[in-house]
Length: 118
Image (cartoon, rainbow, N blue to C red):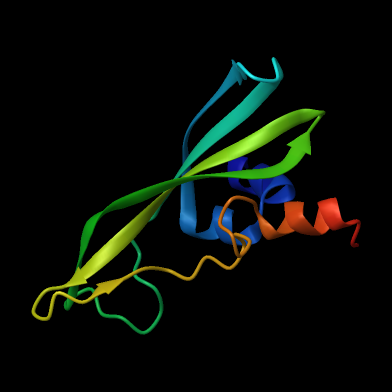
């Protein structure tokens, strides 16, 4: 039920590859706006084409990005993204997160919204 609800509000890739770990509301010091912050952690599932026998979860990279407001509240995601390391070669792989815009500060949906696209 929760996953269905989240999929109505958030990018498909976010709900498909990540679990919601926490959420909070806080007052932004600069704007005094109440901000909804949601922390998502990537599931320990390798991208397609890679074998769990060859790779192990290494650590997380954390990034905060902005998304489309919900009920007039700014929304920011804290994305805890996994990195996997090849057990022999040390090669590091990460999942492609195309729902994050090129500069990595906004979701692609927010960029389209701000540009006035449909």
